[in-house]
Image (cartoon, rainbow, N blue to C red; front, side, top):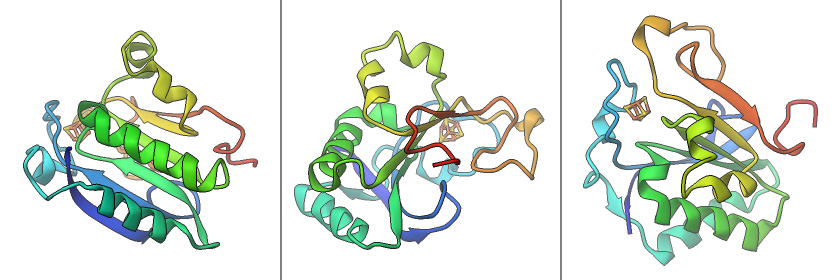
Amino acid sequence: MSNIAKIMPASMVDGEGVRVSVYISGCSFHCTGCYNASIWDFNKGTPCSDVLIQEIMTLLDHDYIQGLSILGGEPLQNIELTRQLVRAVRENFGHRKDIWLWSGYMIEWILHSPYAQLLDEIDVLIDGPFVQSLYRHHLKFRGSLNQRIHYLTKKGAPFE
Ligand code: SF4
């Protein structure tokens, strides 16, 4: 299974509400100016395991936690682990917890890829690579103007 670089048990910056954030190691895009360049290496961090996934579920099991954020690294280049995390959230919490996912791939590409089904299982996708020339410091939940927030379900939408 892939490696996990970092787990934040109560993040307030990786999506709406207070969230458990999981940073998966490994990304081949190597965008200039990437905030997470230290975890481009797929071997960084700790190999994930069923025990670690269960620990993440325990962190989620608090009323003040709105959901899980999956970041990287590149979650789609670690698809087995990403799918396991998503499945574990749905098995343990149904749709009571929402799932946000950041990917360097654009939604148009994902929709025609073997990963398309994942979009039916998450609530929010922030897509696209980081582009330094389009960086704006005020953007919420994303770094550059080309990146987009796709609310895929009502659960993830800000009006919910
Ligand atoms: S896709 Fe994301 S994690 Fe990968 S290099 Fe670009 S900004 Fe960094």
